[in-house]
Length: 382
Ligand SMILES: [Zn+2]
Ligand SMILES: [Zn+2]
Image 1 (cartoon, rainbow, N blue to C red):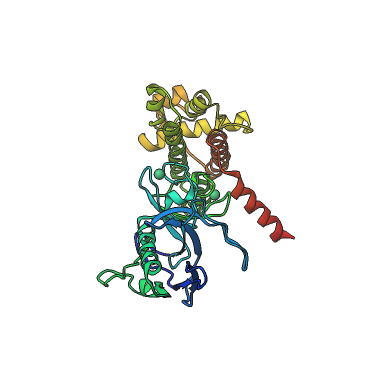
Image 2: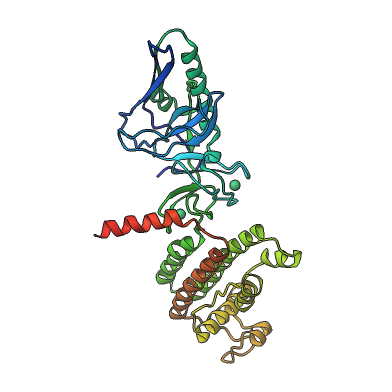
């Protein structure tokens, strides 16, 4: 696993462009060949580019011997692009200018959720490569003689690292901070920060982080330390972050009043109020299919968090007045048990799922990549 912000070298290989003249018609044509013999993963994609070096459209993969579909603009050239040395490609969002790495043809920016044809997400390095490639093709096709142009991507791969002179075709990518495989479609993403949309299907990764990372980490600490009060604080804090992420996205993607926007930027430390907010603003029921006694329990634990966090565990007037807890008196130290902390974590997992599902009922995901993964999974089970 690569560390944060490390340069990732190209996967290497050699691209050969053979330019030929048809003797009868005098017309020039070209053939492409790609060879790769380095011990690194490598993914090859093909696209059409306009001769002036502008990427036009992806070429859908065809089987060996299959005819390559013609470009939508006659005269466009076939360009081969290969991945970085981990088999991934860097991408740049034309709207927010965010950079990330994923498979070759993303559909959605993981940061701002901009949806565009995949060709729009090529990185600066890839666009520079395409311009170089087209310049070489132009020169070869203009020349009176036939011949072979070799683009040595092995030299590019070898030139990775600071200080090395870079070949003209130099391409490299940069590792980001959070690598994840989307839980819905399985696609790989490497993004800045932690929270993002999957760039293939548009599913948010917040729920997966909450369920698969935050909750297990809190349980582990709880089991090791038996400090249930700390676990409650951490659980509420993790939920607050999660709710804040979905709220921020909703606030960005849906036009709404200033008052609502202001509310969404605040904390989600009062469970009943948070539940009411998502219901009233977006018709998202975060308590769906959770029993009312469990919802009351979550709300109580959220009140307790406040006491653990700000009052050293002693019940204050706000707690006595608002929590509905009649078992403690003012100034009494509230005791928490590991069992109730685990129960809170179980329930918050379900609440988080409701929030995630509710969010995507408004902000849709792309179903094709998810269905494709489902089908692949079924095949694998046969
Ligand atoms: Zn973006
Ligand atoms: Zn996905």
